[in-house]
Image 1 (cartoon, rainbow, N blue to C red):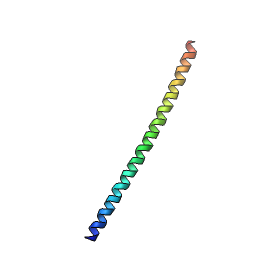
Image 2 (cartoon, one colour):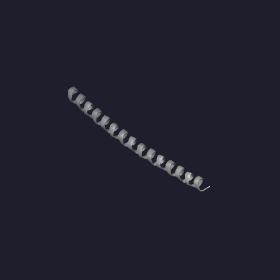
Image 3 (cartoon, helix red, strand yellow):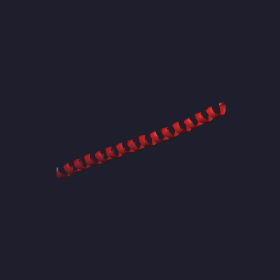
Image 4 (tube, rainbow, N blue to C red):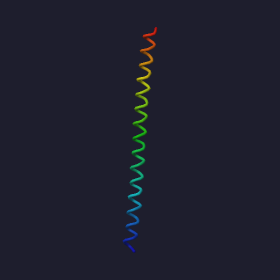
Length: 56
């Protein structure tokens, strides 16, 4: 019975660690996505500015 209790605790601990890791990965992904979006926006702005200069 004691073994079963210990196994249950371990299982809960592992599940919690997995959840924490998943959350961390999600945050990292979102940061990466935001960075890429910002980069794209900057590139677009630069292109638009170049176009505006050419047409001026």
